[in-house]
Length: 174
Length: 299
Image (tube, rainbow over all chains, first blue to last red):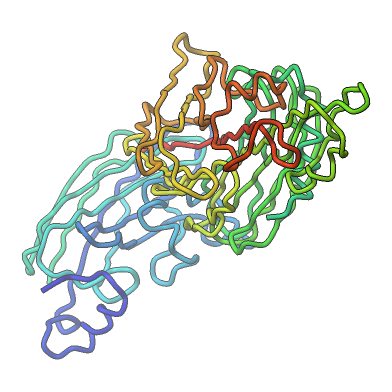
């Protein structure tokens, strides 16, 4: 079956009786470590999480930024999360329902993503890459990529950043 | 296309930079080329200098023409002409790609009437040429110039409305969008001359920041049979691109009007068919050029 990362398909899948979906929704437990960086001027990083599949448009799962700033001011620096902005962000509207979130403090940050909710699609088996990018004001930027094969039941992937990101891992289950 | 502003621009540029600026490079340098959000400003430095992008010679004082993503004309705000550079701001309120352009277009020349040599008034257009030169004029020497200098800024996702060709001079048609450039990906652009793909154009690409390195980091290429050129960026940065039908001089193509004798020898852009040298009402020479500044981002 050809996989399409569109909201329409997600909706169709949700409504379809033939395909497994909401009854046993795919759940991704994501763990992103934001290292404590001892600098005079520290700002919590903007972080974007997205899913890539060859031949498909990238799909944003989560963006942490200054979502509450007055007049949408926080969106002004979204383009600094550069790879994500080009892959997906620039075609989106903000705030994005179920995708936008506030910036997070240093430490291990957990997030649960459920297929069919927010930006998380129901995945068909195949090769994917989960990408996490962090960009910090008056700081650096780093991208961590986690390629994985989804077999329809369970997968775990782990990677580690060197500067703006610590350990990044996820478990995807159905 | 409206000519009112470019003509004014032409006069302004001629007054400000000619003849000293000949053989210098004209450039527009935006503060950002890729922005997010719905309400942003970009500021632009406009100058003429040898080294890119250092304003150390003359300002480029022409009022630019702004084209918004929806095709409507925008406004250059806070325009200021200083000793070495001009600056202006553009308020981005639409989503998509903006064009900020300085187009120098017009006819230059001279003729002899009753033993007296006269210059064509500044701002003469090709259409006015027949009436601008009085009957009985001899030794008519005229040259047309279309020098296009434009930059692009995108708020949100890139769009293509501002790339609709006018059919005059050299124009850029994106294969790769000029606001979608990353250092590790080659970019392809097509160049048109008077609306048609132009092969063999000289494309000079120079990385800015030359003051702090010994090598100029310049690439010299020609457009292929379909008018296309593919540029491999050596690194991220601001690049100055200049496109001419003739081989550029080492310092880069000057943008100011040149005496007819030089222009005739250098400009090999096609002349209107069947136009003999110096015929009244038809420019005998032609200079066309295209200049842009492109920002290439790090991956």
